[in-house]
Image (cartoon, one colour):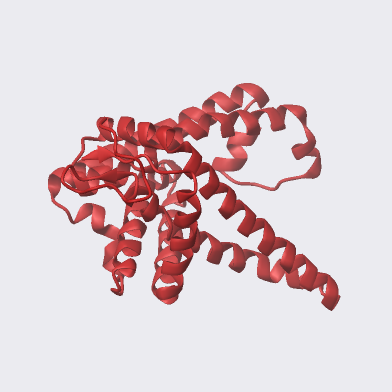
Length: 268
């Protein structure tokens, strides 16, 4: 297996393929995403360790959505059981995925812990436990500093885990090595991932502005509040339907030629 270096414009291709694949199987992929959200929400409600458990399950659940997208792209109808693909690939890989989940939970909690140094933990408590957000809280310089610090620290963590579940599941890469390979792949294809992220941000913002415009034209500001959550969830389902393509094009088997519009793949 080799790393495939792709042009920056490939990020737009990933964005388009995610949208195209979602609309091939909108009911199946949207339904699986809402099941994914429900599982995470139920896990987080457990006392004491609920949040940690939800974080630990996230890599395996994300892998399930990637597997669903893979099947939809092949013209198949993904069934609900695909969400637990990570735990149906044998005991060794299931154990490796659990280790990966534990590492992700530990890394995320570490990020939140470091951010607490900036504001005494207000941002971390809001993110992990929940609560009401007030304008005064958001305007606090310490709260903003904690938020930006958490975002800055989460970026490398996200890059380490972006491809890791797929590497563990489909290529039997050990958890620690999968984190390293994922970080290298994201770094080498940073231009494509940046365009990919910007395209999704533009879509989210554009749809939000469109909802505000429609609500203003109709004189129904309450319409925005009624539509914003289900619309955001639908867009999130589309986003998760595109993650598979970022992995598919970032790695190639040793005997598989790279895509014609990409440079020759480089070894790890």
